[in-house]
Length: 160
Image (cartoon, rainbow, N blue to C red; front, top):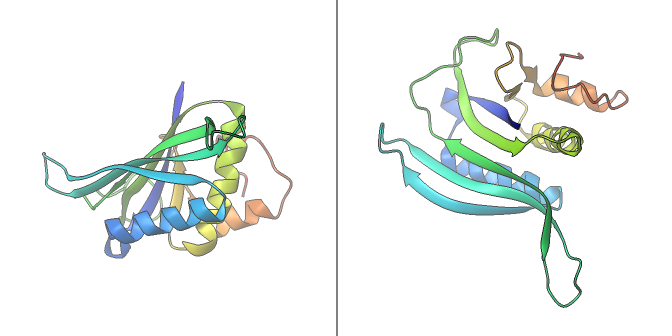
């Protein structure tokens, strides 16, 4: 079963290229590889999009660098598409700027936790939503999670 994490940004703070650079900085800081698959303008509404993947890569062959992935998630970064996130209690000035999707396994829960900590250290105005939950974590709440023992249910129930 796949899972999706959404990163919400304020409408006025979002620029697709800047957001892509923010994501690249987090990936680099975490020792991950970020690949951009394509940049395009959406056919339906013309807004800018960037698609790619973030991978944790290791090698099991000293003669062949980066021979196997241990983790890989797909991402889409989008410009504001006119749809505000109004089903959360965070105000109506946010939208889905980044979606991260993986096929769910328990190892990804911890990976996303560590990734979220890295991302929200520098992006303190953004929010994180798991799939279609009716609540979100603020950057401040993610940082509070960092200070308590890791709880594997952090994505499925609001802990702070």
